[in-house]
Image (tube, rainbow, N blue to C red; front, side, top):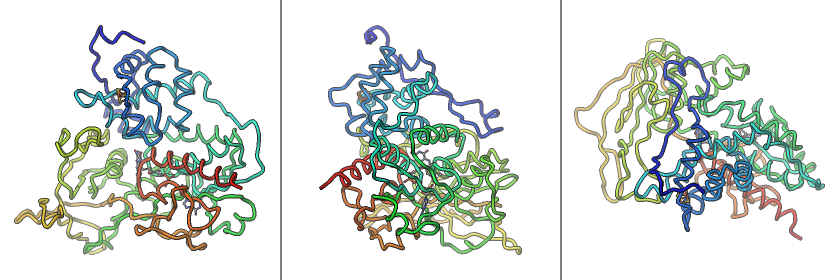
Length: 474
Ligand SMILES: Cc1cc2nc3c(=O)[nH]c(=O)nc-3n(C[C@H](O)[C@H](O)[C@H](O)COP(=O)(O)OP(=O)(O)OC[C@H]3O[C@@H](n4cnc5c(N)ncnc54)[C@H](O)[C@@H]3O)c2cc1C
Ligand code: SF4
């Protein structure tokens, strides 16, 4: 291992492509660090006795200290093998994970954490470049067939792990391409769709069958599934966006964020778009309501489409720049995040409530009526209270609602067979991912609620183990 006593190495952040250049296309914006820089960064790892990155923070329990050590020793193939033992798709999280591991890195107590996500990115991309990542079909096939419903990260992870165990896996996907939100939600400038297809093609070469354009519960029945498959796992994601039911909501030009993002991803994939879904921000004054990541993805997308102006509104208070005392290490740092899209343009406002939409005579959105709130603790609750004389309006031709998701909503398969749901509407599963029907499992956002790609992958991996135990139990 490199001698850490000689030089003090600071954390190095990857930079982004030049703003003027990147706004001209939808290609990935983040540059990678060089091999030398990554090796230096990996030497910052303390190889902790209790590695919080691995044991506490990473949902996949990636063996981060040892992976870092292999990198410092130039043992890239060993680093890759170790990474792949816990993680089926490092190339996805290496691009779009908030890096929960870094939020809990021990080094972060006194200085900045190890750049774990960047290390992971170089390992997996080196693996693809050198041909070390190649189809690894199982040596022996089993008789049982398994149906995976939905091909987002949870479904893909379950399919990959079950196939490795020798099961005959078919993935059913209602969209024309597999990948779920990796393909249709997350913009290309964060995750290139070639990266997703590279993995899907590898999975096909390993023997997994993908049946796209097929909605389980509509195009194929539960009866069909039970006749052909020994187990079913439903990984349909959360499809029901949160609405903003205020006066004027019915006006034309007010859309859910996913409508814009899905339309743009489909356009880039050359997929047909129905006229009512052909939404673009080009030449428009755009307001995004919701200050989270989906809202930020709308900003990057709208700017590339040529939006005239852009404003993102958030009702919650502006987060602090550094951790608050009530949010100590090793908790995930609740601090203000500036995404690559925020750097590109638009304005952000916090503590703003939208109370009314107003439209033209033709019924098109023209302006928003807003006011400022302050957040106060009252009777044990943290609530927004209107600030006097703070009313203002914003002109808008396009409003995007990025307020999160309420849950899966109606699901043709789950509803046809009467699967039980929890109080939030998610499919109810026990601690072995089993739903209320024997042989029917569920994982990812449809069962756990809206979350992160890394959690969906971890849930899919864990569900695959549970299905294997179920099918092997006497
Ligand atoms: C705009 C946006 C940006 C995001 N950005 C990030 C990010 O940067 N980093 C991050 O970690 N997380 C991000 N997330 C969250 C992340 O994408 C999700 O948590 C994750 O994709 C959930 O995976 P999943 O497999 O459970 O569901 P999904 O990815 O939603 O996939 C479910 C799939 O099931 C299919 N399906 C549903 N019902 C049926 C049926 N009956 N028959 C056949 N197919 C069906 C759907 O078409 C879909 O393809 C983002 C989410 C959104 C909306
Ligand atoms: S917590 Fe940070 S310093 Fe410790 S082992 Fe993990 S990456 Fe290395």
